[in-house]
Length: 256
Image 1: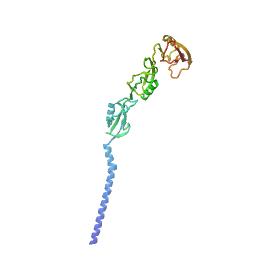
Image 2: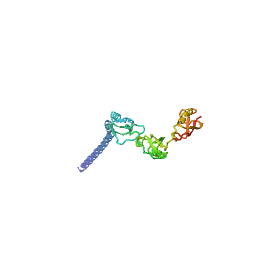
Image 3: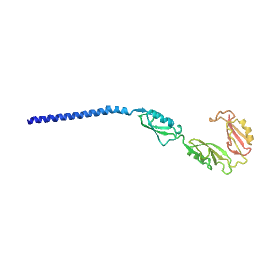
Image 4: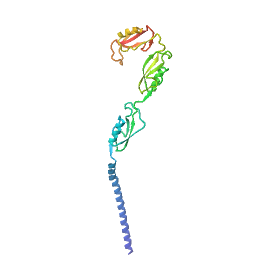
């Protein structure tokens, strides 16, 4: 009788163990099935993706409507960036980038262009021409034409003013003309720029101004000279822009 009970208990324990192991195997199989099969199905059903449209250069209104139509949200970042090619207020940078696959409903972050950076023209009055050039360069501007002007109190060669005026805002890289004092010019006449004019047409103008013709040299026209023709003025000595006394001899270099 005891032997029968022992055998029965062994059988019962063995059956329980087999059932338990089988149950573990079933659970593992179900977990793998859910992870590999069901989850991707549900994920694909509820998290569709789409291609992020290219928004660069778009205005705010157009960019926002484009994102809505594509199934995305948008967020404008507070800080913009200066740019030389994209106008102020338009999309400069987007994240995610155009062409990327992203979940529909994702927020696309947008950065506005501030356009070309503007700077204030520095005050150059009283500075030398060299100092003026340094100040303009540091401000991101280019020194343009040097204009001579008469002034009683500002010494010869010192800056009187700029064109545009100091304090005005211009774009980085703009050219600024500098007006340099020619000192007291009583009894003196400004020598104009005759570059490109025919020498025969310059003679009567010199006579009216009270100057005389000096030496004339001929040489090949420089590459930067537009539409050079024989006899056209290349340069003068003294240089144009100087205030000169009457009867000053003006030397010419003309196109051969």
